[in-house]
Image 1 (spheres, rainbow, N blue to C red):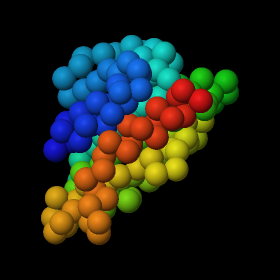
Image 2: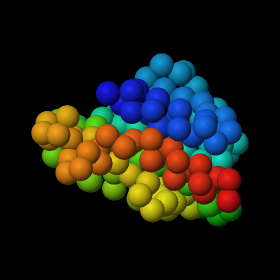
Image 3: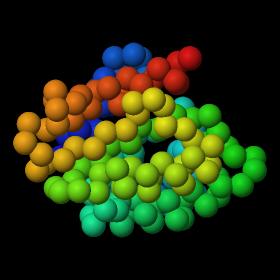
Image 4: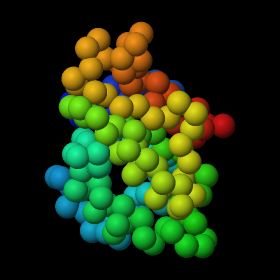
Length: 149
């Protein structure tokens, strides 16, 4: 489900002429330094994670611990870059997982734009009131809005 939702968000981003790239932490064998270089080059990010026991995946946690460490001190090379966050859960814990991604990034100067987060709860009938959980394209749009400003 994570790939499907990310794909929809990135498709929306590309409609605005933004080049996108997927970095799959489970497949791409980049070094920590290589991943940091990609982050320096990027204008913004969309991070997607499944939720496990009210937390992010092990790969996202490792990414936060190892990759972001270099950006958490001046000169804050990521400052001003927007991030959209999508998490997928079976029960509860979506908001906690979003916070566990957003707070370390915020400490590095990255910001979550208004309406820049979404949790998709596979167990919630109808996927939320009014179908808001289905509007993942919105994440792609709000991140791009801040990139092209």
